[in-house]
Length: 498
Length: 87
Image 1: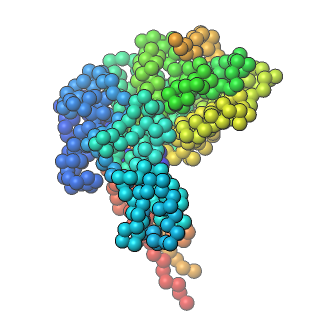
Image 2 (image 1 turned 30 degrees about the vertical axis):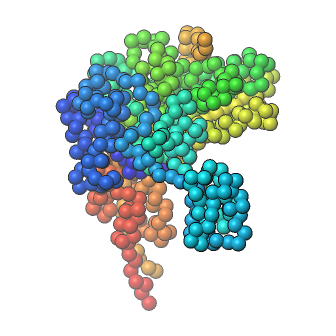
Image 3 (image 1 turned 180 degrees about the horizontal axis):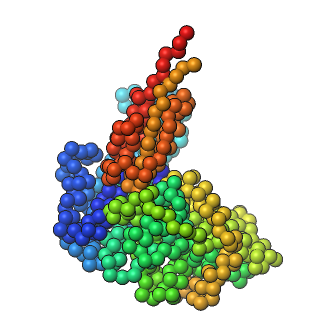
């Protein structure tokens, strides 16, 4: 997360209010109050009037409850409290909030000099440009948005404008519908959350299970599993022991680190790599769900290159459920796409929350992590397992493990961050233009520490993760004995496709 | 030597303020001119008892709520002064 914008503040205030009411047992009765407390008569106002502001807020609350927009707030609250989760996509456009950005893709600016050469007119294959009142004019009825005019103008006077959501989406899954409102094509969307970050109107919302989890904690044993990127997320001055305690105070019975499963994954992927290196030109990681989804949906010819090893989240879920089949497992991470991966692995992951949602739960329960007494805490994972949180970490973990278990095997690793970059790299590898046999793809810049639901700057947390990883006793995955023990007990850490 | 007034700026790092962007406030202070930065004593505090209205800041004892980076810089600059150089 770069900067906390007004959009982010509203989203977080709503989550905190929902959490507060759920903890206090007043959500059903008082949910409509959120409309008054988050949007006050005095403002600040971002839209035309308080009514519009509240209409948007209503939709935001319903999606945050994982409920249909057709319900009233009270009905939505009742459903969420009873644990219901409606079959919504992970990432949704709020119809009220979308500004239907009126966009002419190419516009002629004041920089047009009405020059003599008229490169724009000459370059236009459709004859859509003429001179009107001493300036080039694009006839929208003829324009096919090819961009030749923009490239031809020596003054750079023709501007290309696109919707922020469209520009942010590397898989071209979001576009303006007939009514000019943004719509998401589920067959293309990989739930990376880039559009949510990009939309300046806060019109894109990921569904949340905060209420469902809090309710579940009132009756069941609920276990938290922290993504390796958690270091530094809840405040840069906090000790790890404070974070763990604060999470327990939310009502979680135990706290696991997903990096424990990452150590298992590193070994499984290293073995898989060694076993299959002669059958495929390269292998990729599978832990980043948006990346794996992109390969599946957009580069299906390369689907067999993705490792069959499960993600650290699922691996850790398997470990927890083996020990205690009754435990309700909640993954807490920086990632929106994990919400989808959780649904696809219901057997091992009951709920997925983000750091943002969990911090909002702390606020709702009036837990100030900065004032919580720290417990003694040492990481459950090796240095390499902890490094899964940052770009290049998975690659390093697999390299180190292969080096340790089969030093004669040559791993030529390559990695990329950002879905667009990953796609280019994969195509180049497929074409043999990059000499590598292992590829790490991360949907977010910087890796998981750069995820859409992080709370602290990616450069800061990247450093924090590094320092934390350095405190691990075990350096490489196979040295993490408890994890290797569990690996033997669970047996199967692979996904089997039909 | 010019004497500049020392300013104490306390930024809340409690969970509520952190969630609402107090980290951005620390970041923004790097944009202050050098001489002001030298005269400002920046501290992180755990709570300023105004949770939910954050991010909160206390400057020389006065609590400000819902502070944006731009506001913080402006407040510091208007509260900052140096004595005229004596001849």
